Structures are given as structure tokens and as C-alpha cells.
Amino acid sequence: MNDKNTYEHKNKHKPFALPGLLACALLMPAHGAAAAGPVRFADFLEVVERQNPGLAAQQETVRSARAGIDIAGVRPDPVLTYGRGNIELSRAVTPRPPRTHALGLEIALELGGKRAARVRAAGSGLRLAQAGERGFRNALYAESAAAFAEACRSRDALVRQESALAALGRVVRANETRRAAGDIGGLELAQSRVERDRFAAGVTAARAAAGAAMQALSVQLGMPVEDAFGGAPLACDFAAYEPGADAGALVAQALEARDEVRIARAALDHMRDNAALARANRWVDPSVSLGLTLAPGTPGDGDGGGTARSRMLGVSVSVPLPLSRLQRGELVQAGADVTQAMLALREAELKTAAEVRRALLAFAAARENFRRYRDAVSADADRVLDGMRQSYRQGAAPLLALLDAQRTADETYLDYLQSRADLAEATVALQLATGQRPAL
Image 1 (cartoon, rainbow, N blue to C red):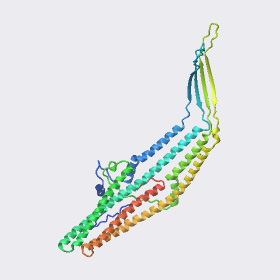
Image 2 (image 1 turned 30 degrees about the vertical axis):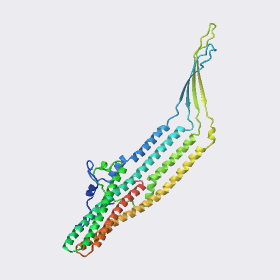
Image 3 (image 1 turned 135 degrees about the horizontal axis):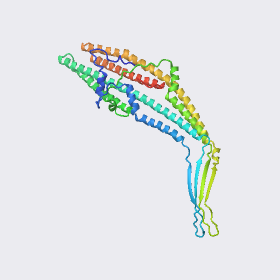
Image 4 (image 1 turned 120 degrees about the vertical axis):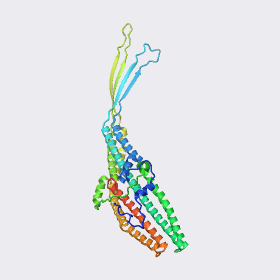
């Protein structure tokens, strides 16, 4: 989207297109050292990727999901038990029996591939989180492109309106001179002043809108725009983008790279892994217990009735009775989740094909409108305005005709700026629809 042929026509009667650097210098207060050059959209995106808090939160989600793989691989902890028993409380029993010490170790054995299923499910959960993070990133790209294009539009609109206000000021000064010479009446002078003052109010509103649009960039940046770029202006001469006319090729590309499709595929894989985990969890886990019991010996009497010290080792296996497995609710739920994920993937693929074709049509329309305004409409409106100014200075045209031509030329130029912003947003929408990193 080359914006070379903008509204900067070489005509001594048209001081409308002030340089973009001067315009942005009026809008952006100096805050620290200014950047070396204009801020390109790519520079803006780089700072957005580093500083946006929402994107940082999504990256933490991915980090958490990655840690979930380690958690899923943890095996059940063994259980160590210790007991001391045979403490006789009755004084009537003599001699008292010895106190025993019991040491046990219980180990749960996972069957059915539970651990491997957990790890697979956690891995697909990580891929789903990564796909979600990419989706959030691309949505952020779209918001950033819209905010950047609006900042450019409002900035250049202010430049135009300030230039038009200056032109109206010159008309008022000329009418004051003509009124003093008796060439025009006081009514015409008053009318030109009214129009100038009304336009000044619009310029004040446009200045506020331009400043607000610049400050809106801070939302995506995650920091004040002044802190990010100082007083550097925005580079609004967007490069041309040619996607090609083969909608089928663009749809095929989008089905492999579009966020919605990737997320839906990752969700389907995750649901399938969860279903496999649900099946694995239906296996019962036996436990193996090892026990060591120590009993001290007892001294004998004179006839030798004592007992020797005892060490007894025991092994036991416990198996839960799988009565709870008679119901199959978790399997039914897991199967339903897989079916829903398959349907969601199909819906995402259909929506992607429609979105790509819609985005291609919107891009073609926006490009055609931009070219029409740039190459014909704006130039014709300016030629009419120049001719009307010349006629008014020569007394061949009334003031109302001049003011009407001025309004028409200004509105046409504002429409041109809007068409440029629309083309920027349509370009990014098409790029994102086909899985590309946006570039302007």
C-alpha cells in the first residue's frame, strides 16, 4: 500500500499537506530522547510483543502447561509406616509383654499405562496452550494494526484540518482588506469569520482525537507511548501487499496455519489423550506392602522360661475391588468431549474458508477504494477548490461557493485517509486469516 501520491500536490495556493514529521511533533510531547527515526509498524509490533501484559500472561499459561508435563510424570509416593504396640496397661499382668516395633513400606503399582497416558495428555495440553497463545498474539496483532492505522489517520486528518483552518484565516484577512476598501459588505466578512471560527472548533476536537489515538497505542504497548518511542513520529507510508487472486491457494494455506484451526486441532488431540487417560484410569492399582516387626526377648526365671528376640518379615498385596468400574460415565464424557472437538474442528475449517474469502473480498474493495481516492477523487476535489479560490479572489464566485468547495475537498481528503486506514486493517486481516505475520 504505497502512499506516495498522497494529498501533497505542488500548488502555491494549497498549504494543506504539512510534512508528517511536523504533524507528529505537534501531537507527541517530548519525553526523553527522541528515537532515531519514524516508528514503523514492525517496530511497534516488536515492542508490543515484549511489553504487552496480556501476552505475557498467556506466555505464563504456556509455562504452567509445560510444568504440567513434569507433574504428570510423577509416580505415586511410597508410604512408610511405623508403629509401636503391645503396651500392657493392666497392672495385674506380670511380667508385662515386650513392646514391639513395626516398620512397613507400601508401594502402589500403577497399571494400564496410567503414567504414560498422563504424560501424553499433559503434552497435548501444552500444545493446546501454545496454540491459544498464538491465537491471542494474532488477535493482539489485529488490535495493534487497527490502533496504528487510526493514529496515522487522525494525525493526518489533523494536519489537513489545520491547513484548511489556515486557509480560511487567509480568506478572513483578505476580506477584512476588501471590506476596508469597500469591495464587499460587512455581511460577507462576518460570514467568513463565522466559518473560520466554526472550523477552529472542529480543529480543536480533531487535535484531541489525534492525541487520544496516539495514547491508545499505550494499551497494546503495555507502557506509555512516550516511554516506548519518545517523540518519534509514526511511519504511515505503508507498503503495498499483493496476496494473489487464487482464493483456493489462500484457503489451503489458512487451513494449515490459521489460529482457529490450529487451536481446534490441538483441542481434538488433547481430548483424545484425555479419553485414553480415562480408559487407563479404570485399571485398579494394587499395593504391595513390606513389613518388619521387631519384638524384644524376655528374660526367663530360674527354670529358663524366657523368649528370644524376634524379627518377623511380612509381605502383603492389596487389590481394590473394582465395583466403581461398573459405571462408564467417565468414558461416556470423554467420548462426548472428543466428538465435540471433532465438530469444532470441522466448524473452524469451514469458518476459515469463509473468512479467507471474505477477507480477500474486503481487501480487494479497500484497495480499490484507496486507489480511487488517491489517484482521482482527492486530486479532482483539490482542483475544484483551487479554481474556486482563484474565482473568489477575482470576484467571480460567491463566498458560499468557496466554502462549499472547501468542505467538499476536506471531506474527500478525510475519506481518503479513512480508505488508507481501512486498507491497512484489511491487509492485516487477510494476512492473519492466512496465518502470516502482519506487515504494513
